[in-house]
Amino acid sequence: MAAPGKTFKIITYGCQMNQRDSEMMADLLQAAGYEPVADLEDAGVIILDTCCVREKAENKVYGKLGQIERFKSANQDLIIAVAGCMVQQPGMAARIRQQAPYVDLLLGTHNLHELPRLLAAVKELHQPQVAVPTEEGPLAEDLPQRRARGARAFVTITYGCNNYCTYCIVPYVRGRERSRRPEAILKEVADLVSQGVIEITLLGQNVNSYGHDLGEATTFAGLLTRVNAVQGLQRLRYITSHPGDFTPALVATISRLDRVCEHVHLPVQAGSNRILELMHRGYTREHYLDLVASLRARIPGISLTTDLIVGFPGETEADFLATLDLVAEVQFDNAFTFMYSPRQGTVAATLPGQLPLAVKKERLQRLMAVQNRISLTKNESMVGQVVEVLVEGPSKTDPARVSGRTRTNKLVIFPGDASLTGRLVNVRVTQAQTWLLKGESSHG
Ligand code: SF4
Image (tube, rainbow, N blue to C red):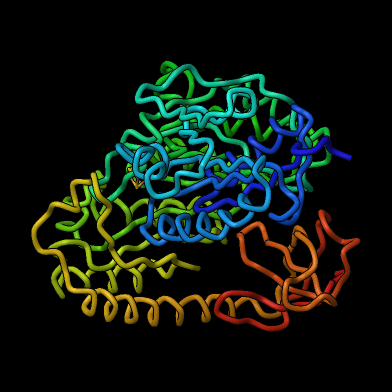
């Protein structure tokens, strides 16, 4: 039983980087004697781990803070913290303090490891604490050992990004790219595998540029090779890849490594060279298509997923058709499609030619229709195949079934119970939908 006030609940918004940050905060709190609780009502500390990449995520945070405020009137000792990249935006800490003065702690992306100390300061001094530096300090390593949360785990390899794509706020809130030392990453992977983890996903905004800041000898290909050799690891994934930094040498390395899964998430964002240049993506459509061809040639059966933005400032109908054409040519297994929305502080927000919402919506619908047809056709071609599925747990919609992912990252649902969680099961695909496959356990 935790001491009064020593319970916590973390609500996470945004990407896997944030999920991993939240896990890290949970580990730190548990090492400091706090216990996680399922319900907000039972928490002595509530942390919102925020995202500012999309405006919607930011609005959700304010909505949630409004709801949480009522717990504070019932429990004056409740500590409310807001952490993550929304807090790190210039001027945002002051804005949150103004809009939600009951928030006790504001914690930027570079200070998450200071959470226990800052919570203690809030309690002792009875004063709100703000830790949002503009300069990054050294990377925090040797934090309290975390416990594995099942058969899959995320391991961060780089923080920040150097690319400054014109629509993206990440470099401003997560800072310049910084790579963790390979020894620290390998130790974390080995610890997780010794606790039963069999699938590791290496995380970074641009994993392909891993090691640029550590000297020439340290590369992403080298890191993958070393992680691939960890005894007991079955599957190795990585997100996110940047097409501009995906070298032929890396393609060759990946094709040789047996644990590396046959899936690349390779955001293309647009199919028009003019728009790619305005986005400052650093590659052309031709480079992207060559890369896809070489991945498919070297890694048979590889699945490719992507991110696409429609309605970037100045996007003409011809530019948009170039995106549709690229989607049809590549035949992605799946795509995350977004309407461009301006983020304050980015270059794209100031570009001329911002498009009306109706145009963006209409283009998004057309793009989704094309991609959904492709996803369905690709999934239908898998009916009858036997695939290896790492079971993640009971299906959210049907407790008599379990769900998991193939090496190619396809979601599969099949009859089974919670005892299969964390196991690799061969499944025969019997039915295909746009977003998932259905199947039955196979002994073949
Ligand atoms: S690569 Fe571009 S889109 Fe991705 S995080 Fe960096 S700046 Fe943002």
